[in-house]
Length: 169
Image (cartoon, rainbow, N blue to C red; front, top):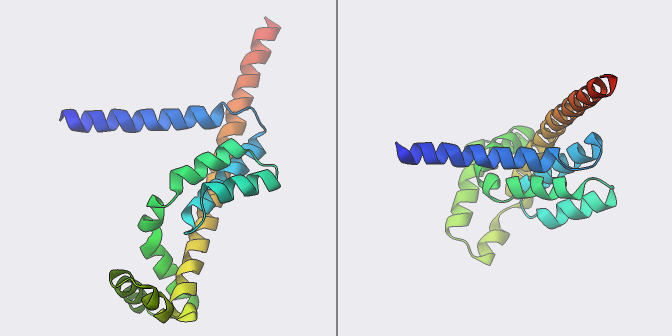
């Protein structure tokens, strides 16, 4: 029972810390939200991560702290969770059986050698899975942007409303 309570407290602290990190950034809601969305999307895509998120945030003048935070939240560990979804989405887009695609990847990973990697057909195995990851990354990035932008805008309106009330008194 104590372990469950401790786990719940740790999860609660994590989300509170995340909330404070994102909502206390001194930047526009658009830049913070876009930075977080870019970071989340790049964190999901295999082979990308914090460096890519920081680079894109710098190039497009987005908030670098939120981009880094987003990529760290989703980098690598969530890619394993989303793998099966990427396989299924890629199979639908490329009109192949997802079980065959999944089996090709599993057997390639079990017997991983550089020669096995070259045996995977780019058009039949690699491209569908990467396309699936791209779809997931874009959709999750859009959802993260919309939610973050809404919450940041709401928080700032509430804050301004409280300031205006204090000025009127």
